[in-house]
Length: 167
Image (cartoon, rainbow, N blue to C red):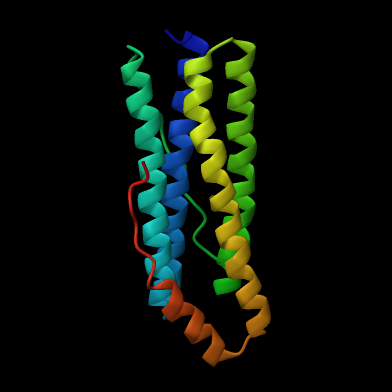
């Protein structure tokens, strides 16, 4: 059985995962507004992934015999300076989330909670991809150098992303 403190920490992270989805939905809306529907689609897939992360925390808390208590979600930013800015902010955000996950791992170790630590190791691995993907996309934007035809190619490529629930 996990401690009340750990339940509160995991619930807080669940809230942050939902907020991450809200951020990516805002980014999708911005991308659509500037005519980049492929990038918008990529961010909608990112929203779905973040909500799946929140669901993993929710399910775990309930499996441990606790009730999930949700809190208010703050408004995400809505103004960005272009497509590259979206991915710069995405990478920065995912690095922040990685730090939050590592702090939870440290807390689980401190509480001698191997079950929670096992759950969190899934998220540690997931965050590698969560940082790697926007970093690779940013490299493409930098290589494009503002060329509109190349931006259109990136937009078309990102439209191909699909979402699969990981095991």
